[in-house]
Image (cartoon, rainbow, N blue to C red; front, side, top):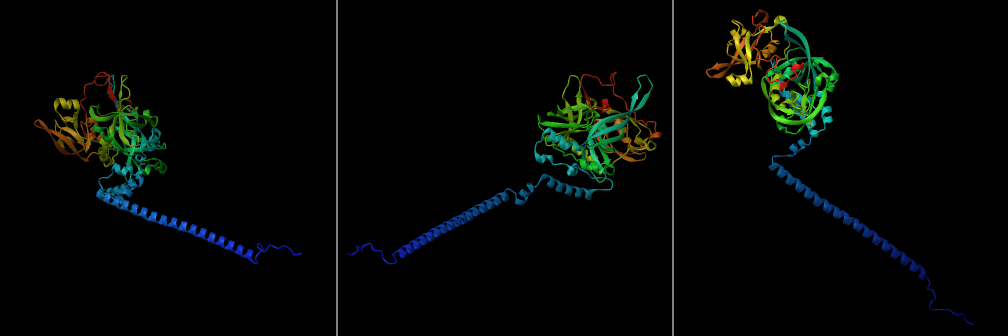
Length: 494
């Protein structure tokens, strides 16, 4: 028998190996194609990115060039704009260094040049931070506020005909650190805070106390600048104090919040807050009319000379007085800093004087009466000191002062009473020459005349006390109208 055999399906020799080889080749080609496709996609992405970058760069460059054109047309440049991005403290410091350098160049042997702009060299630029809250203002400004103690000798006329008695008086006030020169730290306060002082002491933020002297006063505007020698101040104190930043009181608005800091009642620094109640409020204090800032922030005895601040921590006023009456509440007043600044700068540049020894005490040789605003309007006489008597052959007589003249300034300091003149004479030795500005009658008008007077020795004068004719007062020693009156704290010893 023959064995059955399927010739049609008989396997061909080597066919299996060929099929497997073809499958491997096909898989390799497919993998290569996928890899090529993937590589082409990456190349496409990179190309798109390059094109986008070129387009974006061109757009940015075009915008920058257009910006330069606009800035040039507006008068701006990149340097100006870059300077605006610097911190205010660095910019302020550089400008102050330049200011200090020019001041040093202009300084003369007879006069020290100091301004409140230089004063800000130690100040913290709070205004750059915008409005602060009360606690921020207090914390930042407190190191620039000082307490002032004034020891003086008061004269009191006895009610029982025993003549005039003297007694030592101690009063308290406040001050603001406003600058320094090569030798002194300078502070501003009210004139009535240091008036008649025989000894002035200043307390700083670290509770250290140093002796101070009067640099200059302006009684008419109730301003004074006092100085503490830098050589007396410890380094630890200098590290803690700052110089106050001056603001712009002309920019104040009614209703704006303010903060008052001062040595209330002599207990130490305290803080009160309120608003600006009124601006340019005309107030008469000690027969002198001033336009002041009115605030309802509590201003108490001892606050005189302290700072009234805006919410950026800038000094916009010097606390001066308040209405004292059971019928009035929340009416305090401050001298606008924009009004005070030029006066302060003039006082800062004056020669520092100390009270002279009694043996060298000087006198002018006049008697007179204060010309108040009311008297000035009634009789058409300039405000100042009206000369009612001149000692024959005395210093004033020899210098050309006559009866009927009105003294306006004593060695550059505005005076409004004989007491102001007596106060100034405490700092001048007999034999010194000073210039006095007077108003002299010239028909129906008064003309300015400046005379030079050589001061005499007080012990040799019949008018050594420079007596003043007193204004009529009531039995309480106060002018009539006892209901409401202005209290500049002097009646309390403040």
